[in-house]
Image (cartoon, rainbow, N blue to C red; front, side):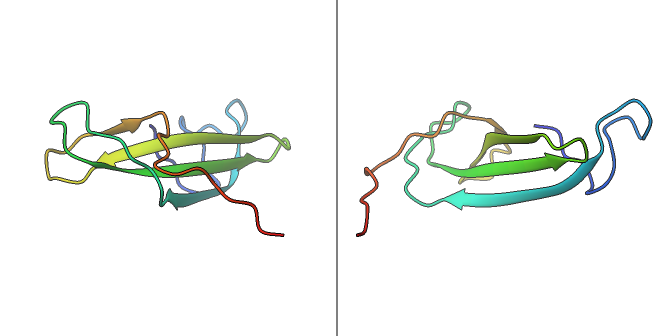
Length: 86
């Protein structure tokens, strides 16, 4: 997954590329997945990116719990189902 500074595009060209207004990263605490490189447990994050044109994109990102160095786009594998309060 590409990383951009808030307010800058991937190309640095503010005219042709989408302008990132905010980017927020939240850890998925009930994720239960394994690293595709070494098989160790991974951490999962939901990354929400908002653009100046009003679009919002949510992607998932994972990183290996060991120092193998892997990180990339993953599918969130929940360990438990959510429970509604009410």
